[in-house]
Image (tube, rainbow, N blue to C red; front, side):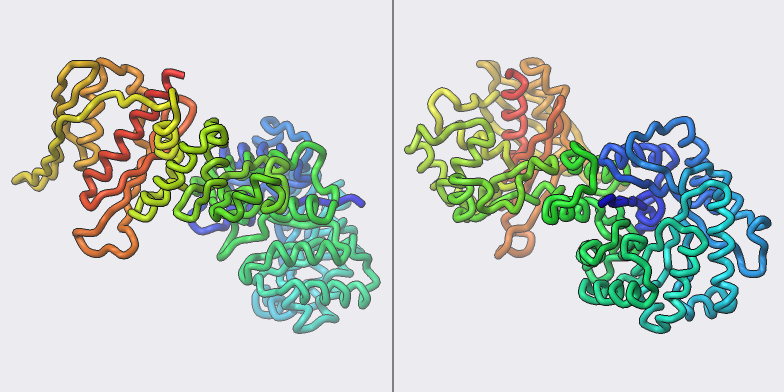
Length: 526
């Protein structure tokens, strides 16, 4: 059984709101998809979109694909125009790809109202265009747009569209749930009915699902279980409206749950890397809760889970995370028990199993702090400092002691708002005073502290405040509310996150900043 894994991230996925790929981006995404081992990469619409025309031109010399075949996408010839005279069809040939995908109307209502032509002419358009491309040596896939809705409306005509495409030489006819309104049982029923009606084998069909009912992946799996061997999707489910079927979830489910060989050997473990790299290129934050590839896909919070995982990780993981390139994580929260703390500490390279008193103390501290608003599940660095503080010979020395700090916000006559911070600290027996300005009180405080420490700790120049988040804690209100601050710091080769909590947002920020610098300096010494 040979499956055709067909990716349309660069065409259908690019229709996501706010997403725009440059030609260089498209080339980079294509290389990543090839690393994943997909069989076909739909690169865009040459002749209709100048950027896509340029992509195919450059791809001929700049892409060295190991697994995938590049596909150009376009439409059937225009109504009333000879296929040889249609410039859009000419553009498909000029792209010089081994394969071409054609979109064709499969719903009679769209033929008559959108194309404004006859049922017979639409069939002729499909027949002529497929035969023309096949005669020029192209493998042809036909996407039956609005297939499922059309089949409900007029099954005889929609079936005729399918039969016409295959008779003209199309390699696969793809059933498209263009409006994304189908459910898995309905997909299964339509495939059974259309194959019985036409006598077409299900392996000559493909499936393309939009995610408007949040069933795109499930619908795709249902189609494969019904015998379809060509399926389409996009990286991370990108696409118009709620998106497309997520190619990562599809291939992982088929390979790991149904045991179907859909990707070449060794490619499945590239999934997390490819997913996150494509998200970065798209300038979209990776979805932490995405199935299989999200950072939280194998993250466990409840103490009950951790107790079982300590015995056997697969007791609470549906697959081994490493098979898709992911890792299991233990989250430390108010729900944590001793097993959670022990597992999380081990994950950070700290063994609490041999220190039962420290384990009990850390567990108690975490519960008390979390009850007061602290959150360690997103602040591994602060948690590590806390644990090491309870272990003999592992505590991290603070790089300075605080005498005082002061922050001033000045609104000047010209409308400018400037923050100024002064810190007074002791570093290695020396009293240091430093003042700095910033675009806000926390930025000014961070700059002043770094200035005070710079002479003693030159490695601070490699640290950068990468992200800063403030949250009002549940149950507190108004300007006097208790706040939680998360600070993400970027250093050489890694990032780390620290947390601070206080009714005063500047003081909460100070706690997080001090932890960030303490942790970073300790790591720099390793």
